[in-house]
Structure formats: C-alpha cells, structure tokens
Length: 157
Image 1 (cartoon, helix red, strand yellow):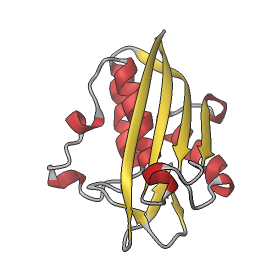
Image 2: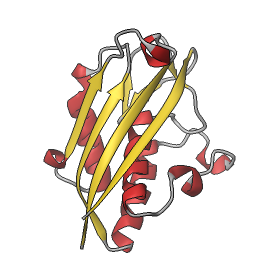
Image 3: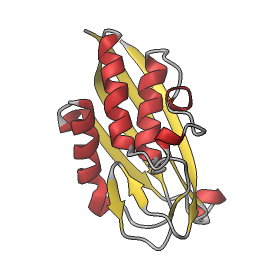
Image 4: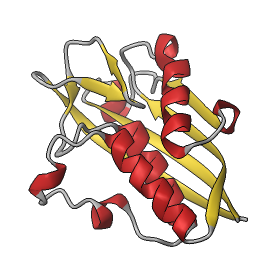
C-alpha cells in the first residue's frame, strides 16, 4: 500500500464558473485557473500521483500548454487513473476535504463523489468528499479562494 496527499487552491473571481468535483455550482464567482480550476479534482489527482511517486499535475498537464486551457479536470483525472493502472496500482480509497466559506456545498457532495468515482472507475463507496468553512479566517474564510486537500490510498494490482 502507498499513501499520497494532494492540495490545491484557486482564487475566486467574477466571470468564471465554479466547478468542484465536476459539478457546476451556481454562484456569483468561480475559480481562476488555466483549466476549469476544479480544486477538488486537482487535489485528488495530486494525491494519487504523489502516492505512486509520479510527480504532480503541473508536470503532466502544464499550465503553459494551450491544449489544457479550459480543460475538464475529470477528463484529466481519467488520464491519471490510466497512468496509475499502467504502473501497476489501483486506488483503494480517496478522502477529500474542500475548504470554502461559501457557497454551501452539501447539496452537491454526492454528485461530486459519483463523478470522481466514475472518472477513476471506482465504486462510490471508495470516495469521500467533505466540506468545511474556515470560520471566516484566512483567504478561504474571507471568500477570496477555495482550497482542497485529498489523501489517496493505493494498492498494487
């Protein structure tokens, strides 16, 4: 077994969609980034890549490469899952936490779990998604950005 941790953060801006775990969440601001800026999916990818010692998403999908501009992060997660299988690993489980003061994310968590599980070809019971506020502390608490942490457990095939 191998364990990896992933972290991502993006700034909130007007004029962008808010996408978390592949779910478009109605909100007045969205996350700024080269791809769709899905911090949850990015943290999951980095946790998986870290557990397998395969680098990070910046190495696989550089933000200066035009082919990834506006990219669907769930599609990138599918690529990561294929790379993982090719290297002889499978995901045992994912545990992820989104740090956001707003909007309320509980209505969207189950769809996020389903989307992430489907992209990695896992049972939804292998994917946990939680959300917490920051009690108005720091940049996430001030609503300036959203962050996510994820932990992945890998097993050899």
